[in-house]
Image (cartoon, rainbow, N blue to C red; front, top):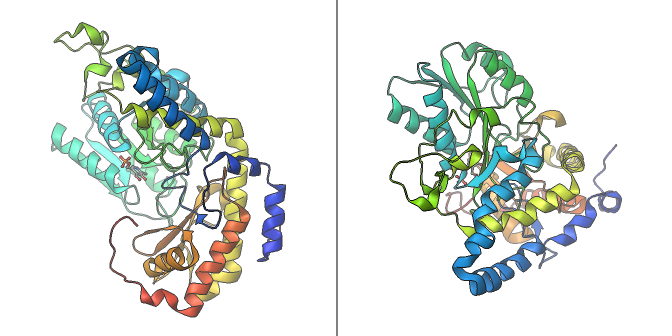
Length: 422
Ligand SMILES: Cc1ncc(COP(=O)(O)O)c(C=O)c1O
């Protein structure tokens, strides 16, 4: 479709939007606020408000300790099984636990132990820093002789298939990559890279934080070994909501959980001093879950399942194409660069615009235009598309806001010293 810059077209696109009806399922108190940061912290589903009230008044308030047996003990598993449907996993291959960072620690250590004898670990420089820090920390802890290969970018956004093919060899124990890059939104070909790793019998661990809930995938059918991901971004689980982890069914009895706590024990309430791992995915639990936060993940997962990951991806691509088209006609002439792939098939659900004054521009649209995007060093203004509630009109207004603060020069009054959450 040919896009133009008019608000009329944006509104017409919204009227035709098959997923438009989902917006009213979210708490939107200020309709004037243009929220394009659902890639970092999703909006609140209205069902979460009612659920939190029930949880506090009834489950915690009335049922007290009995609520563990009523409901809470099975929550990590039950929500994990639902979430499995969004990433193409079997219901008993996913569980909710801890944070993405902690789950990375657990799965990296498990994988390295399982592939003991192999010395090489492969990742890339555009991976999320926490992933690289933890990879290095675990490798050092287990054996300083590990060789950690952090591949430089060679295809503009990430690492080419050919370079990965050369880097992964018979000595490679583990490959850890993000499916969608947090800065550029570049998306690796999950099937192809998994196949490259498996050809050399290396394990692959995918960080799905920026794709879960917006990109269809088939973790089990592709034979993906391991995955982790966030629930507070596109899944709308709430600030700091626990993360998910996936372990392919046949690997679950082979990979240790290095943080083997009582929640991962086979008979937790026998209080044995010997650790005996639970059967299946439960062994990757560690300690008492943060129940309030954990429970809040379910409404967002339910909404995503109801809308369907296929229609969500279709809308996400269409909206990011729309943004790219507005960039070309409105923003490019003002010095903005497209820091995301042009090809929709290789792009996740956010679009990054680069500008030398990116940080000040990001503050200016927030303060003056009520447009919430975010900023990632050195020059990326990220606009997140959350197809369950993002409208074309919002995208149009955000682009006009970016143009206006640059044209007027108003961004110059903001500091370029990075402070707080960006
Ligand atoms: C791709 C990616 N991986 C890992 C993390 C770390 O997640 P957490 O802080 O929840 O451990 C983030 C956080 O935003 C992320 O974007």
